[in-house]
Length: 243
Image 1: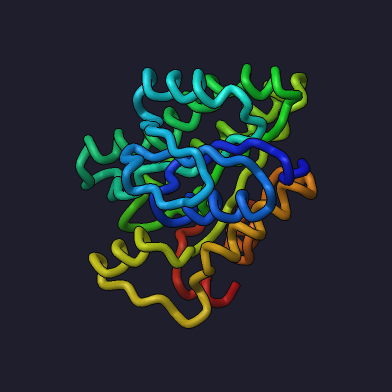
Image 2 (image 1 turned 90 degrees about the vertical axis):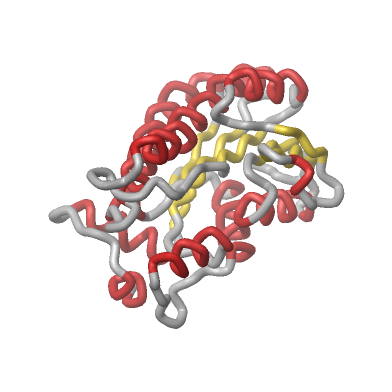
């Protein structure tokens, strides 16, 4: 996909990877709708800011009614702090699944006709390497990302006929405020070199999208994908550092 001259909508642009996606897409010559549940927190000069809660169907439909020129949808927004499946708070677990799976699906269902009218375009879903390796302490997030991987593969088949390219970004440990907050609360220290700069990740993702890739992996994501040929493995910092 040629990004120069494209029109992109990015979810969750108030911070982290979503913010970097919006900035880099603008730098590459795209028009950008930068969205968030709290649009007043979005600071992306040059973008058109929209309020969007991907877990609220009315909010999703309102965004699709405004952003009728979109030919790239970047599904980045997600709740990440679900905790463990057996002992975690059930409401937090449901919210994790609602945002990662049902929220992503709601966005795709709303924007698939928009993309079709605009020539097909592309969808990029932001996943995580824990979709393939799980992670003790946040197994509900890993399960939601596994479900989102299956969703991505499913809609890729369904939307191929309208010419929509569907890709997944599957990264490992990204140096974001969300991850650092989680690590601080859990008392985790990251080995040197395991955290990837989010700006570097976004450049990797958009280069892969322009090249027509369907799964875009950093080194930790690639290592996690390779584990699928053997017995299930939990994510570990030692494995991440060695990848």
